Image 1 (spheres, rainbow, N blue to C red):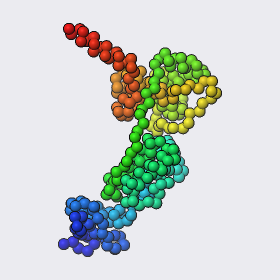
Image 2: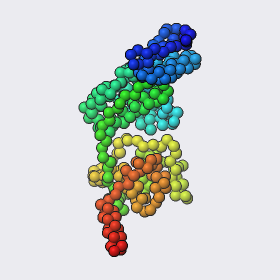
Image 3: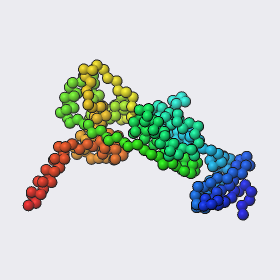
Image 4: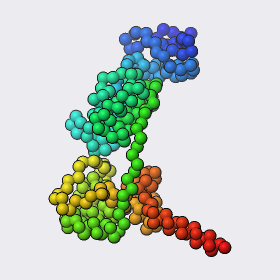
Length: 308
């Protein structure tokens, strides 16, 4: 038997419930939403642990969107993925990433954020002209809020997140002769910038932040410190006579990856140069041309002929 204040367990139908007294002495009963007694015991123990610390258990109050948002922000700040600029948070150097979520889910109880509500959020965003992949980034951030809160035993249920279809990766790239032709048509002032992005695969956002203390001409190195991250600010263009249609600056990054691989540079070294962290994303940039496919098949044919 448990003494008063220690808490208790109760099975109603097929579901186990647990009870405890909050900091104000009021008895609370919460559902474990599970048929397993062990789950209810674990949740009760977590509530008791919180009470011993002098904090109200999450199960004793209604978690709101702002509560799990705070957990995400703290995690980003701790991992240096975000910084505070006054009262505004910059995540990966960008402002307003949480605003779409704040506008829709602000003040909402976490228990009310269901899959149907998430679908409604996606529909409203897309009705306002927001692309599916951008909606996915919004949902991914909200899902991370739930996962972090679940890890801290502050939510017990993470809803299913219906994601939109991702767009196919761009496949534009420039072979060396085409790049030389493009660069020759550009104003001389832009040519070093184009060459730098094409040869190293540096993102245009990071390139724009490079300052002389990061440059070591003797060792032919440019070291970008932590915190120099990609951004999506509009790229300013000048007069229309040198605007090139059909390519975007990020295609130079794709070309750099392809050039490194085709030159025989090992994958680990190439990823270090371009700054890619995962092999999956790196390989998305390694576009295989039709000519390479023909070359591969010619090698197979030649090998078969030699074996006869």
